[in-house]
Length: 124
Image 1 (cartoon, one colour):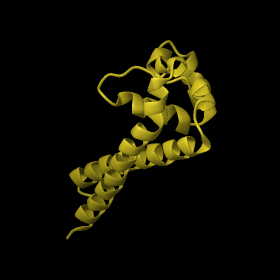
Image 2 (tube, one colour):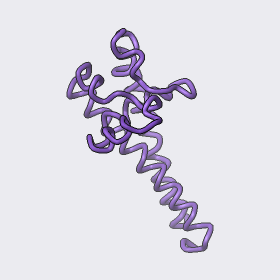
Image 3 (cartoon, one colour):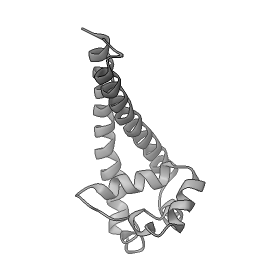
C-alpha cells in the first residue's frame, strides 16, 4: 500500500465521519429550524436537497467577521442568517455544526491536495 493510498484512505474515513455528522446535524438541528416560521426563510438558498444543512453549518461554524462580510455582500441571500440562527440553536447545535463543518472542509481539502500532489508525482 503506497503512501498516497494510505493518506487517501484516511481522508475518505474523515469524509465518512463527516457524512454521518451531516445526517445527524440535519436531523437534530436543521429539522427544527425548518419547522419554525421565523427561521424557515433564513436558511439560505437550497440548490439541491440538503444544501441548507451546509448553509446552516457554515453560518454557525465560520468566524463572525466572515459571516458579517457575507451578509453585506450582494449575494447575501445565498447564505444563512447567523444572528437569527444563534437565537434558535443551543450550544450543542453550534458545537455539532463546528465539528461537522471543519471535518467536512478538512477532508475535502485533504483529498484535493492529495490528488493534486499525486498527479504531479510528489507521492510516488
